[in-house]
Each structure stands twice: as structure tokens, then as C-alpha cells.
Amino acid sequence: MGFEILDFPCDQFEHQAPGTNEEIVAFCDVNFGITFTHYGKIDVNGEHALPLYQYLKSQKGFAGFDEEHPLATIVESMLERTHLDYKETPDIKWNFTKFLIDRDGNVVERFEPTADMDVVREKIENYL
Image (cartoon, rainbow, N blue to C red; front, side, top):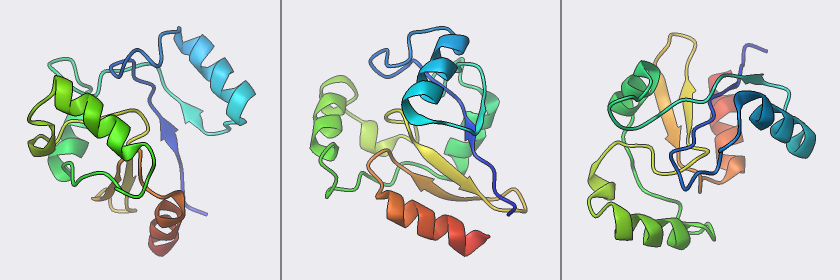
């Protein structure tokens, strides 16, 4: 099919991924039936951000949350208290931010955690 999902756990968002790499993989496999490739825990923001994420963010910055999603106001409220300029930075705002890269290695889409998964699926299918 020509499509691959890569999972990079990150514990920079309210410590949602506190376990070891093995514990995170086991949790995801048992609770969600994940079958895609898992990598070790990384930083996506800050001075220790993985270079891959530095690149991804430089190609597709933050464009806002899907206001229809029930988590949008919750995440925005948390960010407004801790990162006043969050709307102006390309930083990853929360876990489950997704990037879509085409066959030529171009970063073509960025989906925030509030993105409608039907929209994500449609965009993926358009590139296949």
C-alpha cells in the first residue's frame, strides 16, 4: 500500500508517557491493538528535541486546533496558562500530533490532536 505509521512517544505533555519504552509499547499494544512501529521515547520540543521533529515543525507550523473537537477548549485553556505565545510557535502542543509525509519526503500535512480522524484518513488516501 505504500503507507507506514511511525510512533514516537513523548513525555513532555503533563507526563502522559512516564513509563519505560517497553511499558509504553505494552500499554499501547494491550489497550489499543497497535501494530505499527514504535520508537523509543523522545523530546519533540526544546533544546533536546529530536532533529526529525525540529525539521517537521520547521516545515509545518501550528495552524490551530479543530474547534469542533471537545478537547480543543481544554487543551487551549491549559496552554494559555503555561505558554502565552503558543499560537505563534511551531512547537508541538500536545501528544498525538501527526505529520503526513509524501513519497518524496515532503511534509505535506500536520494534524493536531483535535483533528477529525476522518479528515486525516481522507488526506492519507489522497496521497496514496
